[in-house]
Length: 298
Ligand SMILES: [Zn+2]
Image (cartoon, rainbow, N blue to C red; front, side, top):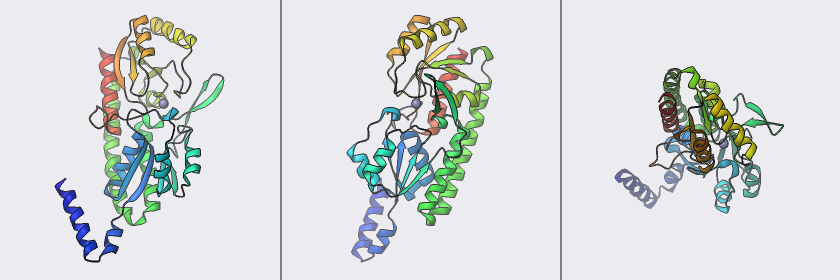
């Protein structure tokens, strides 16, 4: 804090001395990220050179988000917009148009191999690509390249920040693999409320079953719930997990009807607030893997 006050005084002094140009050069790149997980990744790569505004904040559900006039205002003056893509932010096109945004759009999932699945007889794309750290590394490379495109002077800073962050993600990836590889094969199946762990399950060898589909937009039908309850009983699925972005009542009901244990809360589509257990992308992985291994191995 002391440092920041010092910096502000220095800026005021510069302005007083007539170095207005100097203060101007200190302006930061204004970036907007569609949701909190992506916002954290952008912050890690952009560091001090950028200001990031996140549209869907901690514990928020981006599937069903309704943009506000403040979002349009923020976007109007931004130089770069980071989105997840893969159909995650169905509301973004309209927001972009209504805001008059003229900056660069960077779709962070560019280069990801999308998972598709059949839901209600339609083929849908699973947007939750960030739930695999291999994909997370692609996101980071795209974020770095996007920032360099709008702020070429910061190239070396973005490259250094991204390299450091990519190392941390690679280390976490090894830890996740080691932790999950230790789980017994017959217990590698869990229930979550919506289908957000498809990429996670595919990357780390877990089977995830969810009464709701890859979006939270449509609710699970009584038939879907009955089917899951039968499946939990027949396959002795050990645990069901709450999600930070969805209502807990359905999972409570499933747990009480099957005797499956409630394995805690997983962070799927949003981070926790700063004082919670998952305030960053890396913290989210550590928390989720801790909760999964504790519930499944117990
Ligand atoms: Zn989701």
